[in-house]
Amino acid sequence: MDYRTGLAMMQLNPELWMMTPKGEGLAFLVTDYGMDHNKIFTIMLNSGEILDFDIRDCRRCENPSFCIDAPQQPRPHYAPSK
Image 1 (cartoon, one colour):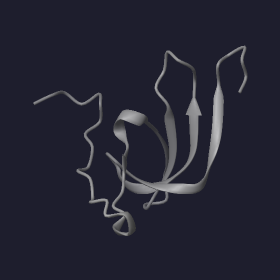
Image 2 (cartoon, rainbow, N blue to C red):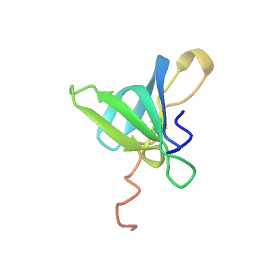
Image 3 (tube, one colour):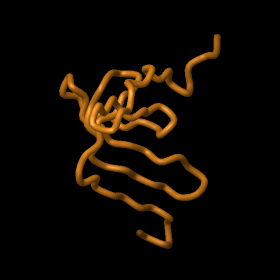
Image 4 (cartoon, rainbow, N blue to C red):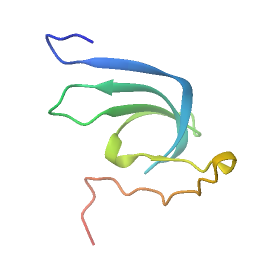
C-alpha cells in the first residue's frame, strides 16, 4: 500500500467468479483507492473483455459446494431507479 496516496492493489489468488451487469467473469484484481472511494474489481468476462467494476455492481456466482445459490444479475449502480 502506498500510504501517501492510499492506493492499494491486490491480485486475487484464487480468482473469484463474479456476476456483473455485463455477464459472468473471473475477478483477478482488486484496487482500493482509499477510504473515500469504493473498491474496483478487474474482471475478465466470459466474452474475453477485461473491464473494471465498482464493488456495488458485482455479485459472487453460484457455488454448489457451499450451497450458495445463483444471485440476481446486478443492475449498474448508476442506472436510473424504476
